[in-house]
Amino acid sequence: MTEQQKFDKDIDKNINYLKDLLGVGESFDIIFREYRVGRKRAASFSINGMTNDVLLTNVFQDMLTLHPEDLSINTMEKLFYTRATHSQVKLSENMNDSITSLLSGELLFLLDGEAQVIIFDARAYPARMPSESTIEKVTRGSKDAFVETLPFNTVLIRRRLRDPKLRFEIVKIGTRSQSDIAVGYIKDITDPKLIEIIKERLNKINIDGIPMAEKAIEEYIVGGSKWNPLPKIRYTERPDVAAVHLLEGHVCLVIDTSPNIMILPTTLWHHVQHVEEFHHHVVVGSYLRLVRLFGIMLSLLLTPLWLALVLQRHLLPEAFMFLGPKDPGIIPLGLQFILAELGVELVRMATVHVPTAQATALGFIGAFMIGEFATKVGLFGNEVVFFTAVAAVGAFATPSIEFAMAIRFFRAILIVLVLFFKLPGLLVGLIGVFIVMATTKSFGIPYLWPLFPFNFGGMKDVLLRLPLPSKILRPAALKPQDKDRLNNSDNEEDSKKEEDSKKEEDSKK
Figure (tube, rainbow, N blue to C red):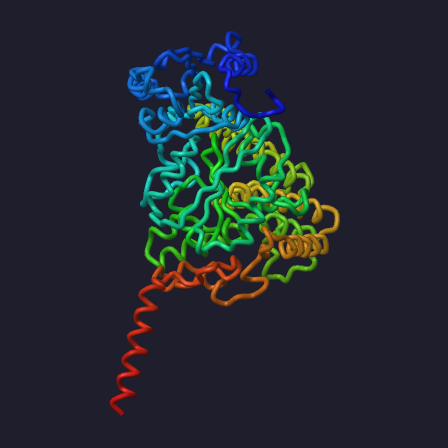
């Protein structure tokens, strides 16, 4: 049976094979039932808790009323076209595909004397309803967010994009898990080469399962150096964010069991923008974006720059002599910053791990008991605590968690370089960070685009929150098939009218 990979006309062979493979009698959740359709034996396999029993009961009640004379010729096709009234149903003769459908929550219906099965997609997944995102919160705008069920997530996107060209192609990953991944794109916008590259990399994944969902997929498909901490994929929990990127020409990967949608390719600027900016006035949105960019720069540069200037105070002009610490503390300054960075990371990790009810108490302990008393005892200087706190706030203001973690990592490297090499170490470190960013690519797109290579229109769009009516062109780096966002059919009609009017005028002349 494993070699032929097709169903046998003898129903007993099919039943025995499926029972042995699925562990009927060993696993309580594999449901096996036998029926009589006319005078023929029939059977079904399903998984407890993953099928809509009420819907299937109505279908089978109608099917079991068939008379023997109705089942003489082409029995399975007659059942399929006249009695299998459920909207999502298909015929299959492939054993492996049918087993995968069964383990995905569908029901297999077998009939004696037939080498085909009817597959009913009457899945009823245990799922939570869409609720507000805990990561990408907004004061205005929609409050629904993705959940762990793939069909729910695709529906949330289709509510916002009623485009017949929107595609969701299913790719199964994992020889054992057979996890579903939907490759989402708009057919007449997204670059076909980008779609081919993504699907090719997905199909090359050879692993037994991906229980870690989106993160495991990312590590297989992003390519490039595995030691580069810069995120090459953006995650979002918001359907409106996914819809906006689809309209620009991006590809979205919707992974079953994950509430995070993968957007690719991405650049640095995708990780520093937030949907909140688009729910405010253009001026206010631009102001918020610039403040966020300034906070990210502070997060990276503030502590290593201050430490480098303090360690070489003889290089400072008199106007900046106040930068030195009044009470440096018992521990050397460089070591203070390293310990402070470790302390912030420990508090952040503990906040994630503890229950919500204890998070407030943990914040109180970290801010007051540790920070306040460390300065009073003399272990840390007040300036060290202050600058570390400002840098931490700048990192928390970064919308992308992955990019914020990369900034923290780079900041720690810069502090270590300053500790050993002072100001030259800082300069070398910053040059190294720039080189890493400049040489990084996400699916062939430079990470610093439109800064490098420079594109004036794109750079203006990433620095300022431009009015939506002025955002006519899609990002050139994505190589979209449809480059502008106007109604091309209307443009063609207008151009034809102009040509006709010109011809009439020429004829009159």
